Image 1 (cartoon, rainbow, N blue to C red):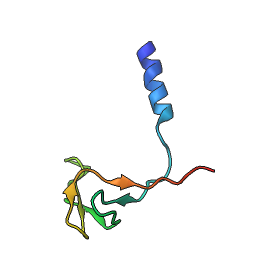
Image 2 (image 1 turned 30 degrees about the horizontal axis):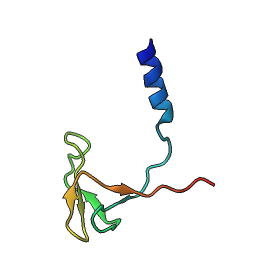
Image 3 (image 1 turned 60 degrees about the horizontal axis):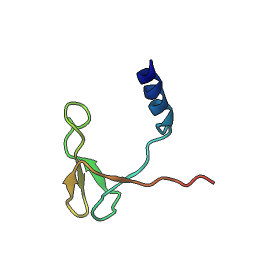
Length: 67
């Protein structure tokens, strides 16, 4: 039962909302695209930056501050 409660707490703490804009972790450019049409479907997401050529699964996201 405790495991269910902990899982419930995790789901409550997860952010809900609209998707955020992704940025390249190397140069900060928002010009990212998925490396393949199969990403997120059959394989883990891998991004390619059109500015600096970065290739990898990591991106940065910009969060708006709550006032």
